[in-house]
Image (cartoon, rainbow, N blue to C red):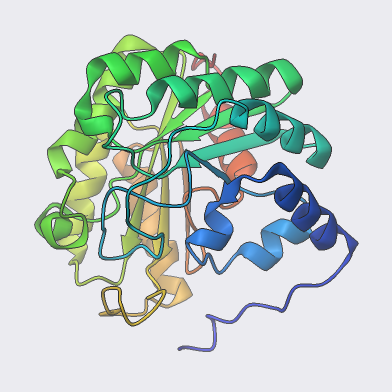
Length: 290
């Protein structure tokens, strides 16, 4: 890989404390299950992205290292364990994601909402960001999660329209845009966010169109990161974008109308999530936030 795609080995007391809190919670993290390259940095800063509803996903996306299979039933005490772990780490911004649960009638919305409420009770000064699947575009499920009061609703578009069928075979480009529209229409006090990966074969014009589509849907925050092949089982990398090209993409995205943009080789949906959220609020303090 290019020299700018190197990360340090784990070390330090903060890393160990984060690891201990994660292990004791018994909750999965996207940091581990998705083989995120930022694990060392984030855990050393005593932050982690919790992945609820199990370790196995009902979908098989071409870019993702999370195992596919039949997940177990939701664990009733998971919301409380999650909230305790967030409090133990002293998180000021809690990011909660989940595997896709197409086996559940509500896509896991009720369990997701219980986790949000538990964190808000246990960590009242923290902001909460959710990163769910599209829940098959169910308005009822999306509204139920909004009713739990997250401050930020993040749903990733992941890639451009042409590549969606190959990269996300069980998802739909327009359905993901529809999730953003539903959140904006139903709960305008919740900020909206999405993420794109680059390096899968997209063109610059296709990325510009994705920027425009997301802004038109009401998305306020965008992350853009380099796709890295987790293992030989996932889609190959078509291109490594140099840091300068990410700076250009960030400028174009801001010009398209996003309040806050994070772009770089190691940027992921939840990378420096608190800072990205704060930047959006600072850019438009008049925008309501639950």
